[in-house]
Length: 261
Image (cartoon, rainbow, N blue to C red; front, side, top):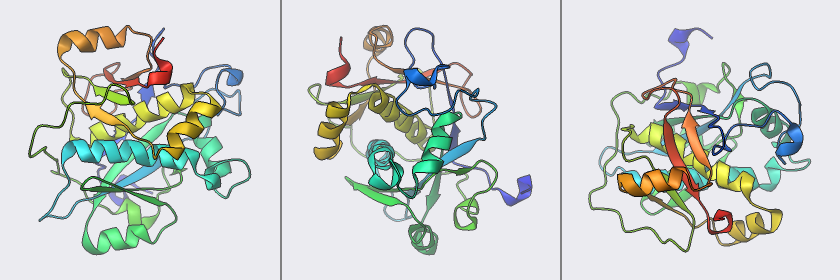
């Protein structure tokens, strides 16, 4: 597929390791992660990407924070779906995706585009005035045509009203207050943060979160709280810097009650 065949994505995001705090990257030792199956270097393994498509109609776009929260819940829903586990129909490609760099790409669709995307195998997650469909991972250079042709240039989202304060008794994805990101980039980062928290939890804790419907908040702390969070021992997402932001930027802290030490 040539570069002309693949339109510019809304967000391409690949996290990099942050020594001491970041758990988003796959450890070198596969025994360190319950989801990595091969000892091959992440860069040497075949590269896959997890596609997410956000439903954006011109006349009724979702609020930014609602879209971020729904994207994070969509990632968690895919990670926990029976088809993605054990001998499920998506299990092999999910293993291959998690053996390589954890890439997520967010695109947008409306009208007929959304209906065509919805016909492909995947899971649609509806949130508060936001809808995101997540698909099984695909090879980095072999997207389904219905997804590859989706256009995203110039699209962003806003919060018409200030988001409600996060519930500190439930999981919170804290976004870096000092790094500006498009809505799509931020959605991918929120997905990374949710995946980090998922990896860190025990089987019992994962089951409880899933059965509760993956409640979570997305919030932007003040700079002082952000600095405290990044050194708290909670999982931190550090971006590879392929799009929009500088390499090594810390973008999200994944705060789950079970992970607070």
